[in-house]
Amino acid sequence: MKDDFGNMSFIYRPIGIIHSPFKEPRGTPIQPVSGKGVKGYVEVFPEYVDGLYGIEGFSHIILIYHFHLVNKSLMRVQPYMSNKLVGVFATRAPARPNPIGISIVNLLERKGNILYIQDVDIVDGTPLLDIKPYVPAFDIRNVKSIGWLTDVVSNIKKTRDDGRFIDSKT
Image (tube, rainbow, N blue to C red; front, side, top):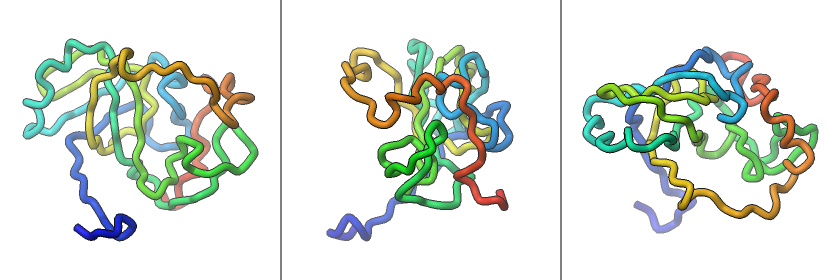
């Protein structure tokens, strides 16, 4: 471990794989609300199954995953719902220095190491890094401003990935 955080690196290993009907980024919903009703499942690797104990008591879970098909990092991006450039940290775009994604999904059922989910906005085969329960008392905030999204957030349900953040080779 180095004392300069800019030179540190971390290794995370997937705890499972997310499965969905989306075989490539292009056409995938860009947020869970855009994927309303879309079903998928999470396959948790056997060595982590004990960590699922009690999860079936939650109606929603937060999936934290690696954008495995994104091969570039950009500091300024054109978000899906805008024609203006903004900083990547003012977006949820996948072309990030650490390509980590989050989605809050509806947990329908658990069968052993399989979590059946709904409202999916994730590409099939995405490596899962972590799962956390969604708890409204912890997670809901009284938000006063949503920045550049104010004028375009109403387009979210119909907006899909157009492939802008993946290389043409993938």
